[in-house]
Length: 190
Image 1: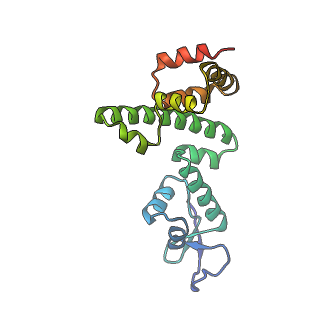
Image 2 (image 1 turned 45 degrees about the vertical axis):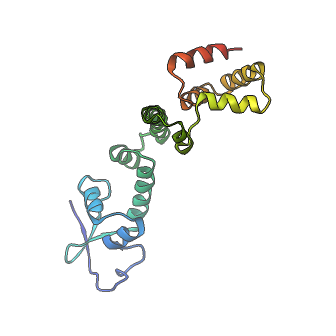
Image 3 (image 1 turned 90 degrees about the horizontal axis):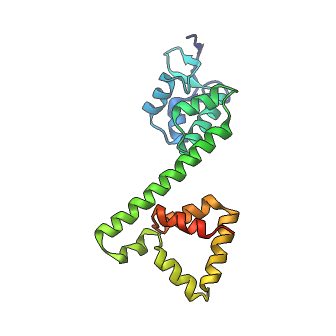
C-alpha cells in the first residue's frame, strides 16, 4: 500500500477537505476503533499520511463515510456496503429490496413474539402499551363505527386486491395465526 505523505503543520491540515480521524469521529458519532476497523477491512482507507504516520482523510473519504453510515443505519451489512461502494456491478436496488424483505420478516416475527409475551403474562392491559391491537379489538372498533359484516368483507376484499402483502402483514399484526390468515385471504378473493 502506498500512502501520500503530507506535511501537516497547521491545524487546518494545510488544505480544504482534509480530515483527521478525530474530526470524523466527531462529525459521524463513531468511535476511533470503528474507523480503524473500517480501514483494516478496506471499507474506508486513508490514502494520505502525515510525516508522523497519522491518517488524513480526503473530502472523497468524508463523503464515502457518510454513505457508509447511511447504509449502516439502514441495517445493511458491511460486506454489502463494501460491494455497493466498490463495484459498479452491484445493484443498490437489489440490496435495498433484500434488506426491506428481511426487515418485513423480522417485524413479523417480533410481532408474533410480542403477542406471545403478552399472552404469557396474562395481562390484557399490556396490549395497550405494546402498540398492537388484537383481532377482537379491531372488529369491535369496526362494529362501533357502524360497519356490518358485509362492509368488513368489502374492506378485506379491497385490501387484498390492492395490497395483498400489506393485508397479510396487517392480519399478522393482529396476532392471527397462519391458518386463519389463509382463510381470511381466501374469503377476501373477489
